Each structure stands twice: as C-alpha cells, then as structure tokens.
Length: 253
Length: 283
Image 1 (cartoon, rainbow over the protein chains, first blue to last red):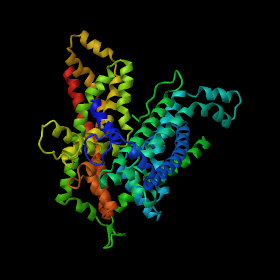
Image 2 (image 1 turned 180 degrees about the horizontal axis):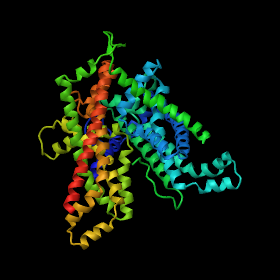
Image 3 (image 1 turned 90 degrees about the horizontal axis):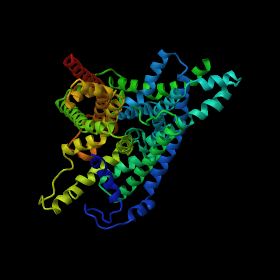
Image 4 (image 1 turned 45 degrees about the vertical axis):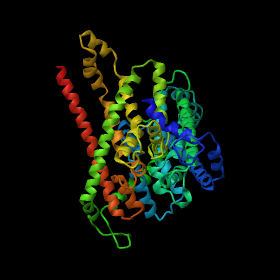
C-alpha cells in the first residue's frame, strides 16, 4: 500500500536526476535540470509571486484567525455554533466553487486580477485553518491561568500579553505554517483569480504539464515536495510541543 | 464582551464580503442572460438551467457522478484495511503509519497527478518495464483513458479516507471486542458487529470528503484524461475562463452544489440504514 502511495512521488524525484529528455529509462545521473531551473526567468518570477502571496496571506490570516478564535470562545453557545459553521465553510466548500465565485466578485467590483486578488482568496481559506488550530489550542488550555492573572490585578491587555499569548503561540505558529503551505500549494482557487502578472508556481507547473513534459518540472516538483513536507512536519512539531499537552493533529478532522 | 464583539468584526466582514456575497452573486448570475458579446445582461432567465438538460450535459454529469461514486467506493475498500492495520498496530508503528499516510496529502495534488503521467505515458516507466521484460510487444495506451482518471482520483484522495476511519477506530472502546469474544463471538463476528458500526462515522466523513473533492476536481481529468474526458467541473471551469458563458457556468455550479448536498445526504442515509440493520441483527 505504501508502495502505491510513494512510488509516483519517488518517480518524480528520481526523474529529476535523470539524464534524458524523453525516454522512460534511466540514462545516468545529472544535476542539469536543477541548474537550468536557476536560469529560468519564468520560474523565478512565479517563485517570487508565490512567496510574496504566501507571506502576506499567512500574516493576515494568522491575525484574523487568531482574533476569531479568541473572541468566539467568550460568546454564548448558540451564537458560537453559528459562527463556527461560518468559519468552517471554506474547508467544506469545493475549491472550484470558491475560486469561481471570487472571480465573479472581483469582476463585478472591476478589480483587476493581480497578486492582490490571489492574496485575498488565500486569506479567505487559510484563516479557517488557523482558526481551527488556534481554537483547539485554546480549548485545551482552559481559562484558569487567565482568571488567576486577572485576580492578581493584571489588566485585560497585560493578561493577554503575558498569559494568553505565550500559551497560544505554538498554535499560532502551527496555524501560520499550515496557512503558508496551503497558499504555496494552492492551484484550484488561484487558477481562477490569478492574472497574467500573478502566475504562481502551481499555475506555472500546470501550464508546463499541459504543454508536455520538460524534465525541469521534475526538479521544480521535487523542490516543492521538499518544502511542503518540511513545513508540515514543523507545524506538527509545534502543535505537539510541550509535555502534558494533548496530542493534536494538524488536519481538520 | 463588547470589546470581544469588536474583535470579531473584521473576521465577520471578511467572511461576508469574500465568502457569502460571492456565492450569492453566483446564484444571481445563474438567473441572468448574456448578450451576443458574452456580457451579462440584467434580465431574468433560466436559460442556464435549461441548457443543462441537453443530453450532452446530462450525460457528462452522470459520468461525473459515476466516477465520483466509484472513486469513493474504491478508496473506502483500499483505505479501510489500511486504517484498521494502523489503528491496531503498536504506538510506534501507528505514529509512523499516520505520518506516511499524511505526507502525500500535503504534496500538491497537481504534482501527484503529474507523477502518473510519468508512469503511464507511452515512453513511461510502466511501458518501458513491460517492453523490456517482453510481456508486451507494443507500448500500451494507458494515459488519456477513463481508467487513468479513476486511478489518479483514487490515488489523490486515499489520505482523505484513511485518516477519518483511523480516528474513528482509534477512539473506539477496545474493551467491547474483549466482551464480544468472551461472549463467544468469532473474530469476524466481533468485527462485523462491534468494529464496523463503531467506525461508521469515520467512513461517512471519508466518503463525503472523497466524493465532494472528486466531483469538484477538474485537474485530474484534464491531465490524465486528455481532451476526450471531461467532467462537470471541467465544463464549469471552461464556462468561466474560456467560453465566458457565466449564466450557464453559474447554473451548473448551483446544480453541482445542490446535487453534492443530496449525495451527501444519501451517503448519510445509506450508512445510517446499515447501522440500523446491525442494531437489529444484534437484538
């Protein structure tokens, strides 16, 4: 079973070092595809787009998601239920629907498709994931420490700054890492809301794959696989940090 | 309390503006017309919905549903034993097993789909191997077939199925199995009447996730199915980005979401019914 899961991925990695343009057979080891990747202007442009979009949308969605988690826990059970549902929506809605509905919105607002529109789209789905992770962390920690701080005379801001924030920080970092990975990896939504000036790496890869295979793509995919896996393992590590913390999963199930 | 409500405002505004409003606009557009230039015309029309009932589109939608259901069922059949094995393994194996299932989940599906192009194309790995071992004389056409699309879908969504089933099996009270065997149940009977019903919620979550993701995915059929195969999502995408027939695209989207909801309810009911049968069988 694991062979089935990993063989295709292994193939990409292997082929990224294969010294041939077309054949399926192994023609010797080479780094050429990685080197030519470095010279590829389009790849560089897409990389810069992807990174800047991911950085901005991660920052905004981490702040918004954390705000939502913090303010929602003080609400009554009923209003919390409804808002919870609203915040889970982007996780449930099919990507294609989210992408096209945002495309429609932007065109009605006469907003030109650009990096900005991609960022807005990425923030919208990332903030849900941040919300899920941070509110799980909040639910785990209880309110005793905050109440104790208030009893000892700390102001609301002091309590937040010295008690709440340090406790939810690992959750926020994990949420941010997930948001970053999601943004870097997203294709379906970006495909609808990206303009010609905001081609991201997945969109570039899609174009290349449709046009036929160039071995450079194997190298690019290998690098992206590496980055995604490292970021997610890091997020998982942040979530499980600290003894006595209940083990959590980075996935929204 | 008041300040907390204030804190909530930016998030609520954001979600309203970029989630709820866009979807409402799509529903609105599905009821509009377009003029000869392809621009929206603000007059009421159900032309978009009418076009859907063309046998061509109905056929494509039927194929999409069949493919999605097939993908879901195959995923379930493959994933259950996997999840079962991981959930009943030693803690060390569990951690590793879960990690190994989750990692592909985080690799871009575009890349995972493209990997199958490397394997399936005429000069691909599978054909090269078969040719060199002399099993076949001519390369097989595997890419751009419906089978390739099904394979790509199943491959992409296995983690969506394994994880929820694992969670359900992990949380189940294992003492029930001891009780069952004390009362003389065979291993199969214990599985059938104790384990299976308890993992129902996990299977349901998995099925819904796989079904919805499969039916909304246009990339896999695009890359592995070639121009021949198209799913409803390919058509929706084309209406918005190529043909610029937004009312039709919007109508298809509304139909897509509605039928997805119906399918989810049906899955739900099917699972529930099975649960009831099991309950009756127990008494």
